[in-house]
Length: 355
Ligand SMILES: Nc1ncnc2c1ncn2[C@@H]1O[C@H](COP(=O)(O)OP(=O)(O)OP(=O)(O)O)[C@@H](O)[C@H]1O
Image (cartoon, rainbow, N blue to C red; front, top):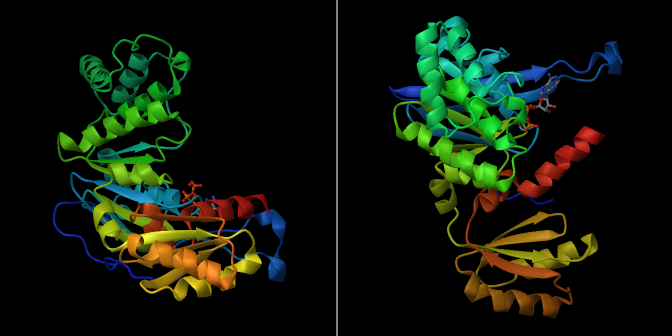
């Protein structure tokens, strides 16, 4: 596979300024290998999850941590929420060092893990009251706060029903509401819309987008959905195999890729090299990335080169299975920086997991 030059839009080690909601500097974390697989010389090496990851989010913004499965997103969130410690590196949440003062950090954060955290046998209101009481609210305040947050998330009507009977989308909103009941300064959402249908996902996106509009809440959202990251994040950090491959606002990242992408597909791997040579021979194409039997070329203007691409394939005797042109999207940003398409990164991961 040929890999395009990596060109980060921001130095990942850039220090944050005053008013920072989250700051992670050079986080490194490996997990012990599964004990059963071997000991001594035959023991497998540790599993690297983060290999020096840095990012920062100004207070009152949404930071998106985007990456395929296994990229290291949950590990970063676990460190920032004090559930795990890094092997090295530092992390500040609302200005507090997570390693030096984890108790203070826990007081100012809300955390929505991937798995639901509410009691399915209680009503929505009961769950929220219980949560508020855990954080020290008296009975009256807990009831008032629960009602206010139920209304804010459009859950007032369902408030008195057992949550086990709620829809997936409503349950997910309740998870977020519970994490917000004590008015945290920083909210962590770990893949909040995984498993939701498109309608419920879109509704939750609106609710999340509204969160930071009202005040100075900082949100860190992990996701493997490109569209979710594009729509919600003020600032995006793209991670792959435990490293930051690019960061910036979604617009900055897309604008950083001037021009268009031409996607040319061939039917079999033995045609790829000739296809690559054909593409590189077209006037106006200056960069080609290969991902399996898909080739992606960058050009200042697709309309000027498309006819040339078709002619070059014909002249080389390489049948084109597909050819399309597209404006830069986060898919192209990922491809450009990680050297493989987002789809194939997800597939690689699934294969690693089943091996
Ligand atoms: N408790 C653990 N023990 C061993 N390895 C782990 C553990 N947790 C995570 N890993 C490994 O660390 C790497 C990063 O995992 P992590 O869960 O942080 O990624 P992720 O980007 O959140 O992925 P996902 O979207 O699947 O949750 C992966 O290779 C994963 O298999």
